[in-house]
Image (cartoon, rainbow, N blue to C red):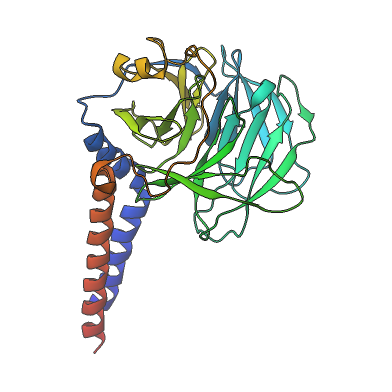
Amino acid sequence: MRERRLPTALAALTAAVVTSYPATATAADATAAGTPGPVPSRPVCRFAGDRVIESSGLVDEGRLLLTVNDSGDGPYVYAIDRRTGRLAGVTTYSSGDVTDVESMAPGQDGTVWVGDTGDNRESRDLIAVYHLPPVGRGDRTVDAKRFALQYPDGAHNAEAILLQPHSGRLFVVTKSVFGGTVYAAPRHLSTSRANRLSPFARVSGLVTDAAFFPDGTHVLVRTYGTASVYTFPDFALVGTVRLPSQRQGEGVAIGADGEILLSSEGVHAPVLSITLPASLTASTGSAKAGQSPVGPPPSTRRPSPVAHPHPGGRSAADWGWIALVGVVLVALGYGATRLSRFRH
């Protein structure tokens, strides 16, 4: 009997850590944020119907919100009426299969980028992004350009892509308990061969999405429980705040007017509009977040890939996750030793 109970207990411990990591990440990131409560929020709409059930990426097109479902869905972009939350159209962008669609980014001239970048098992040799023409109401199938991307240092899981609004350069942000790496794609992407990514910067936390402010000089990076503003291109941390509670908050979008929207996985999940503190929004160019400052577009020079925006190299959230992983490994090692003794 005791031989059976111990593996069961270890399995329960492992399952608890794996299944509760969004909540754990929220607690750790809240400590890093150092704020007493979440930022103010208000509901914009709620996804209606049964098509959008795992909103993982989000783009604000004004009257329409564009989103994609998490893994398991096909190559579809869903247009949602902002006022009602109802499905206004479905755009099919690929004739082939997609593996794990996780991210979106607004492109230039109304176009849209979709990232098939998810890789929980870190086993994919290549990931892909799709460049779509403008998406509107109604059902349609469009010709989208597919670009294969390859990391220089092995496979990674990523749930965020970024497109710099002035230069049009693409970035991929990985997701890891030890923080994310921002990878830059080549300035000119090829459809005929794999495009090799380059390390660009580091950010903190379990990154579930990211978006450029319209000024092009600041980036908002979200986790399950926090949002952080970074400067671009050097990715220096401006500040971090707590986000309102969501079932599994993943998507973020910044509209042309600077409004910040959040989406979450789950059936009939609400879309929230949040207000950041003035200390963070002022750094984006004006007192109102997202207003473009006067001046030429920023360069996209490449900072040192070893640069990290946090003193000491890691944030409190990072160290919290390192400690958690260490505790689990010690517990599993102890359990394995006890099990070996029981069997002998």
